[in-house]
Length: 407
Image 1 (tube, rainbow, N blue to C red):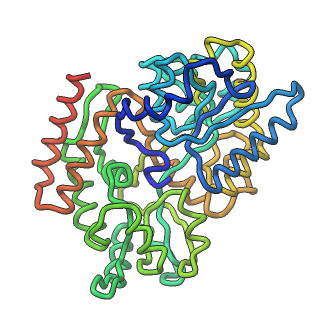
Image 2: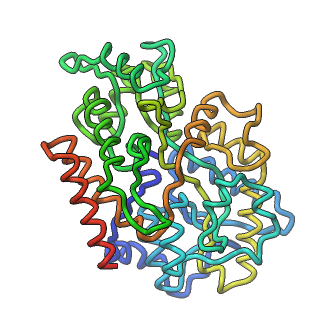
């Protein structure tokens, strides 16, 4: 998902969402199917999800029919629907919404309804993602994380260290000719692998505070500014960075599994995927995400529909053929015990899995929501302006704490 595929920031636009939903919620309409799923999948992922749901509808012994709706601005729609006492039984998103949605009453604690033992089915990362303050509110389908990609048309082997990476970038960097050493969307999520490498942190759930004003964070930002951005196109956004690599004009890119299929279809890229390089001897530590099916609060209202939702979610997240399809077609990182380390996994998944294991799960705490925007604002001003790292990120930390006081 380029960040818009699993956005870590979803702006509040309740009025617009309410207008968009006016024809969808309320009234006398009967709920869709025997259970309803909301998601934001599109393109080939949408085709896959709908095929999987059709397979379940054809194969389940009870004759249940699960329906799905692909929606934009899913976060706003969940918020509006729940406030109106409507909405789906399940919705599909990364785990970072969980704390906020538990605190706001959007989700249903499902432990007593499950027929599977989640600790036997899923690796620790998957189990941790679906739980919040002792409750279980979802089931996981797979993980995702950014990692290093390289064009075999330009280089034979990927760099293993930042120093090796810088040497490659220097060799290929010629902006006057439209050629660059590196490409990456420079946002607050994608740079976490560097910002965490020296011990920095965006948010410490244990103490409930931000680390944007800590020297270890500034060390990571300095790497982003002085090494990575130095060799990349000036525009921070995804599309120009993607195009640079996709057109064969950069040997290296950091991107997520959502981009693999596009690059494999490119005429100018022979795609290689590798673990993230070490940074001054330190492990890179990107934020990781786990995709999962949330059990919405609507499950509290109808026991029959809840039974169908649980049955589908358990089938979807434990059926190894279904999970392998997500792995092979869309590069999901497995979190099911039987697939982790399996010989059936594509080669690209090995690199993503290594970066995933080095990573840090995105905090699911409600307070994390106020960290993203000040971090991006500070990052963009440091990269594209003359802002001092220490001063600007100290101000960002103050902005985060001020925002927490307003919650």
